[in-house]
Length: 120
Image 1 (cartoon, helix red, strand yellow):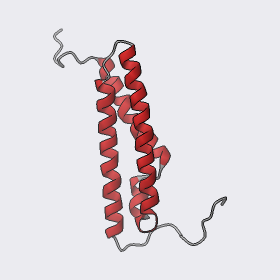
Image 2: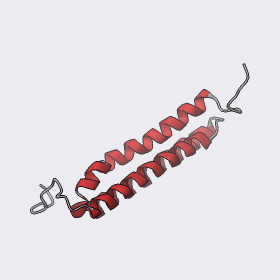
Image 3: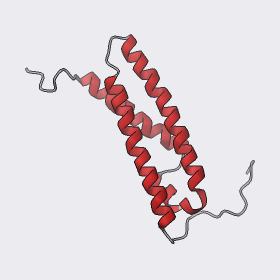
Image 4: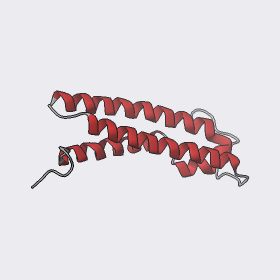
């Protein structure tokens, strides 16, 4: 059967999906969802975006390690990098949009801001 994908195999598709999904997972683990960012942007936009940025850095480390392993085992790093970049881009745009929409909204957030302190 002819390879209609031009040399791209099933292993590349799996690597691409795992890499993109990993970015989503790491960012989700590091911060709230875009929905929470939008709802509470008025009181927490800077903190939420700090965690998005930290999640992107963590994701880049994982994608970098996966790329290194792929090359060392005779595979292409391209699907790993492509999946990571696409996942990072899509999630970053989602959070930027959520922050902008939340700051533009006059609806109240869902969190109280009077009393959080370290240790509580």
